[in-house]
Image (cartoon, rainbow, N blue to C red; front, side, top):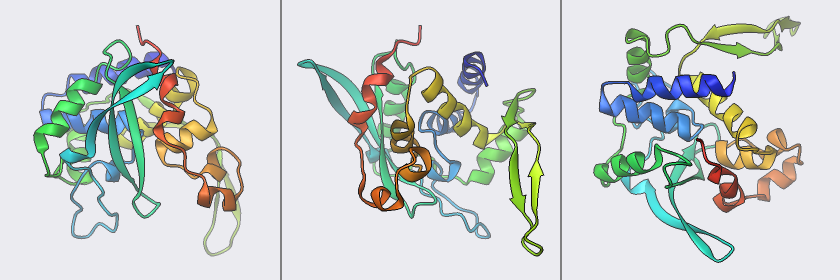
Length: 226
C-alpha cells in the first residue's frame, strides 16, 4: 500500500464518531500493534490474551539531540505472542511530526489507572465491520506457502488482495515506518515487537539478549508529515 493509502486510512479513523473506538483505532495504528495489545478484555471463549494498556502506561519524556530536548510521549506496550514482553512506543509531540500524539496522550491520561480500552477485540472488529470504516480498501497479501497438517504437503498461495480490516493497520503502519520514516530491521523489530532474528536476520541467541530502547528509532520519527 502507498503513502496515499496511509492518509486515506488515517482520515477514515479520524472520522469515526465513537470516541473510544476512534482512539482504539488510532492506538492500534500508531503502535503498529496487534488488536490484543490494545483492548483490555477477552471474550470467555477467546484463547487470545488481552494485554491492553492502562492510562498510566503513557508518560511524557524528552529526547536529547545535539543538546536540545525534544518533547515526546512514551507508551508502554505488552507484546502479544511474546508473553507480554514490554516494548516502548515513543512519538514526538510536535503536531507537524505526529498530529495524533497529544490527543492520544490526553485520552490515556483521562483513564488514570484503569484500562484505556475496556472492551474485546470482537467488539471493535464488529464496529469496524458494521460501520464500514474501511469500506472499499484492500490489503495486498504477498505469495506464501502453507503446509497441510496431515500430509505435510506444501501448497503455494498466490499473491492476492484481502478486505482491509484491523490487522491490516499493522501492515500499513509497518510499511509507513519503512517507506516514509526509513526504519531498518532493527528499528521495526524494536517498534513493532517482532523478534530481531526475524526482522534483522540476527541469531536466535542474539535475540535473547538484544534489547534496543525507543531512543534508537526516535530521530527518524521527527520527519515532518507535511
